[in-house]
Amino acid sequence: MSDSEQIMSCRLNSSCECIGVLISMVEVVGRRAGLSDKQINRMKLAVDEMFANIARHAYHGHEGAVEMSASWRKKQLRFELRDYADPLSASDIRSWARPAAAGDELKPGGLGMQLMRAVMDRVEHEALADGNRWLLIKDLGVSAPNEEHSYEA
Image (cartoon, rainbow, N blue to C red; front, top):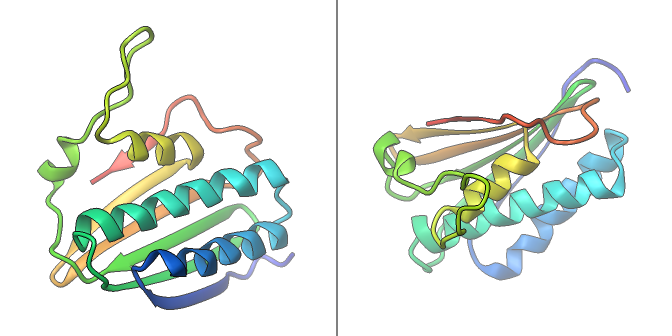
């Protein structure tokens, strides 16, 4: 594969029938990047969880527009999901649950973010004037998720 960036993108509504399109994009991008089935399946989980969070929390279960682009270079995969719901503040995101310490009981709320952070190398959020932009980044050449993951609000 060349060092040039390659991009796929689509615009869908947030209904659950559309998740298959996004999952197919992850599959195609993962295959082109030469990832294993295990790595691709993990990224499918992360994208599925982000899409579900947008549908459930940003749009409160109503349909709304979701755009996704997938870009890859030799050393990095990036999935950008963008919604047009009310922007989230950094304090909203910081209030979500953080990973439990060893032996702590897992509690509902924020577990999806923990899953995404465990699968991807970085999960970033940007509040826009008319919505939110989420970036899920996977550094290629890393066979397993890092012990520490970056999460930026």
